[in-house]
Image (cartoon, rainbow, N blue to C red; front, side, top):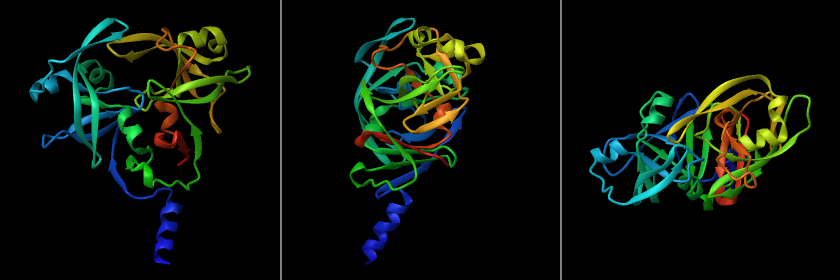
Amino acid sequence: MKRLIGWMLLASSGFAQPTVECGFELQGNVIFVKGSIGNAQALDLVLDSGSARTSFDESLAASRNWDLSMKALSATPNGRQELSVLKDLEIQLCGKPVTEPLVTVYPLGFLSKAVKRRVDGIIGIELFRRFVVAIDYAARKLQVMEPDSFVYAGPGEPVPVSYNRRLPIVAGSVTPFGGQPIPVKLMVDSGGSAVNADFSKAFGETTGLLSGMREARDSKVTIFRGDTASKTGKVQALRIGNVSVSAPEVQILDYQTTDPKVMDGTLGSGFLRQFKVIFDLPHDRIIFERP
């Protein structure tokens, strides 16, 4: 009977053990968590489900005498850039050791400047794929759970997930003012912009979304190694699965970074922070729970 009561309590709370929990800070719409490597001082790390790799700042790596002899090339809007590469680096995050099979190292000063805070590194998709990760924006709490023992029985809406380069993609629709819902596929980006969604240049041109935006204005967005122009405004609605928000602010970027056959843009922090978001990628779903 005690075991049954214990199981019922776990189920009613929406989670099953084991679970670790820690706080996080929001700098604008960017999530900062504390992490460490070995016994060194804690690091300020951005939690980014839209990053295919965990990355660290080049000056930090140099100060800790990491071996940066292994190199790779990465494409950026400003051309190809040389990066350093580390293998099998173990990071302590929220009480969980996460071994990253491949870590990139490059200057993160551009990101620190954009968010107005020092960025030591970016925790990418490996954490989300290895564990169930719950981001409670209202409470500023992060929960990291073992997937084999995770049980969800809360009121949230589960949304199926597909993948591109290991990054999570969800399906939904965007409705311009005076128009019909337009189907979309968006990559879920917890390190994304303050708007609800960023759409690619091709999507904006082919769907006529821009003409259905209100309060449209010129803007810019900071991306890997540079800024790019964009248009920001409001649309009538944005729906992901059965979850909908009214009059969300969205952005149409003035460049094309993704294959339009794979995705139409990204689901940004402006959308995510309205919910408690449970990344249950081990079970191919994301759960949106209204606070």
